[in-house]
Image 1 (cartoon, rainbow, N blue to C red):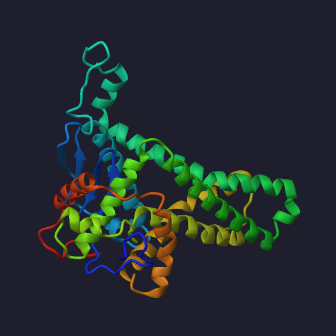
Image 2 (image 1 turned 90 degrees about the vertical axis):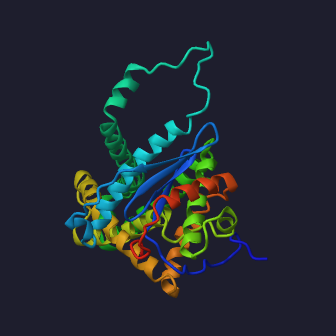
Image 3 (image 1 turned 135 degrees about the vertical axis):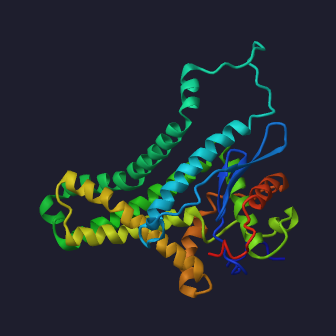
Length: 334
């Protein structure tokens, strides 16, 4: 019998939903068209479901192609950081909260300050995450290639054909760093639990899109790989960056150290915007051979960011999903 693990292709969904999610600490966040909710398995074994308030107001810029992608990405990052921090606290509820000497844990001065300024902490954490990603996946590969050009000599590096070669090499190096990052992250103790919740999120959405009742048995039979995943978006960002940085190198030139670094930073919103529109197009036309081919690398990378969940984990995913399904079935059409 064929299983989700050995299927070569993912069957097109009967419905393509805009509902998406994120794996948390012992839980899942689901984002629907009207509501956002988290479901977390507490220390006592019960499932805590909580709605995260979100503004129903959609700004004009969130509807503009090539601009909306960056705005939605930032909002999702802030919302995801908030949910991740909440899940860490909720997952410990019901578990013993005493020290070795039997006395209750006391908050440090720093913890007390952060609890009073929670929104500031979430925003700063999201910004720090962006800066680390830019440094690791954008600036580090560029810096390595930049230093290589100094070794080979500026006369050769300044030629148009060599500029193309160097930008392609930078892109390949960026892909390698991203792959190694996923591999090393998978080795971190406890991360496999997060990957299982990620897999459960994908399976639950696939079951919902197939029009089947959200039961553990139905969900487990679906694939843990989903074409409209954040991992696929990250791959598109890295792939599109190769093209855009190469074109920029030809038209503008790489320039000095500072100019070259600034160009890469300034072009990040454009890269994210283009990648978001491509992901939307591919998601709407995944029955097309070309679009399905474009989805393959992102689906392959999900082997490192998802794992097969068990029944208790799927139960958490069901609780999160049921909390955000809209009353009107057309509200969440992709």
